[in-house]
Every structure is written in structure tokens, then in C-alpha cells.
Length: 216
Image (cartoon, rainbow, N blue to C red; front, side):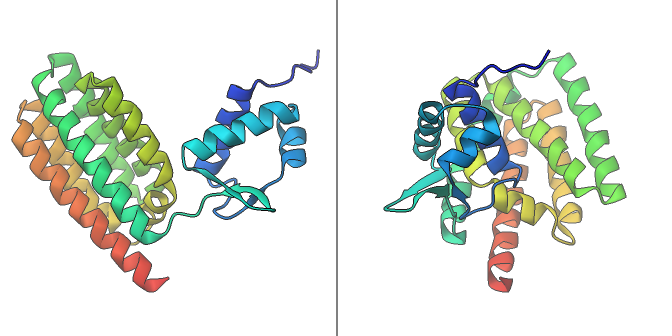
């Protein structure tokens, strides 16, 4: 039986957000209400509520007399977003290091193997997924829900640049040793060591963004 149920505003919001984050909707692309209604089998009210919610998240912007479009993040703003994310991630790492248990350490060691395998095979998409697992791990172990919510929003707004940098030649070679140092430090419950590795990774990411911007 075909499911003819109309999607709720929350479901439409999640669907549009997912399309933006995976590149299905490109930066600057117009988001036409009628097209979205047809695409997501929903009414105009739900679509308008979804666009309003995503505007609040800074993933969508409203242009006078033109409607909604996917918000374009310029390199300078991407740097500011990265700085804010770094401050929050650093705090989460410090909390997570103090809460590490044996099961957590085993999970991280398995994750380290996945990161190494992806880097060795040149699988930038797989490496990005495992890097995101590491980020989610220490954010969740920190047990700081407000920080987690803020980080999710910052991560979403910078996803385009994270994907582009992740596919740059040489990035996996630069990133992997620092990711592994974060894992090693967490397994020692060494907050200072984890933060030092995160700081170096953050600086490397900013340098990669600067090079990317200069070549665009």
C-alpha cells in the first residue's frame, strides 16, 4: 500500500536540512515552495514552517522579492564558525577525558583502525565519516547537551567547507596523525594532550581553508 501521508513540518525540515548538508541543494540554490511541496509530499504551511526553521539555523536565507535560497557561507565566515566550534570542542574534550571508561577506550581504538584504513585507501568520504564519529564520541561523552546542540549547528553551517577540505590532496596525511593523537590522549585520560592535538588539527584545517580560498 502506498503511503500518502503528508509529511509534518519537522519531517520536511529534517529532509531539507539533509539535502543541504549532503550537497543535494547547492549554496545559493533557490528553494521554491511549490517544488518542495511536490518533492516532500507536504503542504505549503509545513514547507513554510520548515524554511523558517532552517532560516533560524542559518542554513537558509530569505531574499526580498525572490523567496528562500540555500545560504552561502563565505570563507571568512567559515573561519569564524571554525573558531567557535574549536572552543566548544576543546571544552567537550576536557570533560570527555575525565569520563573515559574501559569500554570507551576499546571503542576509540576500533575507531582508530577505521580511520587508518580509510586514510590508507584514500577514501576521503569514509575518513570524513569516521572523523565525525570521533567528534560525536567526545561530544556525547562530555555530557554537555547545550554544547552539543551548539556544535551540531556550527557543524552544519560549515559542512560545505569541511567536505571540500576533506577531499583536498594531502589532507588525510595531515589529519590522520592528529586524529590518532586525540584518541591516544583520550585513552590515557589526558585532557591536555587531547586538546593539544585538537589545536594542531584546528590550525591545519584553517591553513587548508586559506589555501582553498586563495585558489578559488
